[in-house]
Length: 213
Image 1 (cartoon, helix red, strand yellow):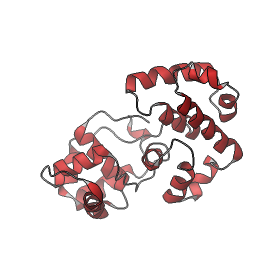
Image 2 (cartoon, helix red, strand yellow):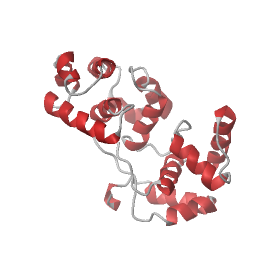
Image 3 (cartoon, helix red, strand yellow):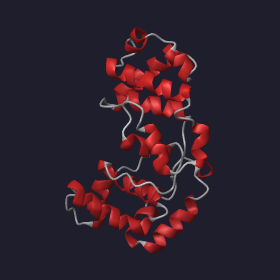
């Protein structure tokens, strides 16, 4: 990803994290030429997250390609015009078809309206998105980080984040249950208001190739 694609706050966040946390400074220094970038519009990002649930990345890419080809213009109304049998023929399960159609309904009705996102805080957006069938808090948090580029999201249910914190801060001690997540949350107070950036670099410490959502 090019530097121009990074959020305006990226360099400032890197400096603040490196200054306040020696472990984070080391991780950031090891990944100097990559950064977070937003990809896709809100509807297609969420639709793709539903398509990819509980299947491999390769399978998800294949289903998504057929889905896009079938729907043509990827808008809530164009997708909703497709028959459920047509969507299932792309490789979607009956339940995922229901989820996709509920996503369309939320956008068409205005219950989810991306034009309002700029004026909403993170929790308000999470509440809207998790009202959609098939979208839980983790997916909503990934949307905040990767689509809206929100700077201070801490996805406590993300296994990669928990594994990286265990490795770099807890000498490999497993993080389990509410107590474990509470420890991560307490540790992350020092990363605010850049917890998304800290999370992103912790992911990079496990996998140097950025994931695209």
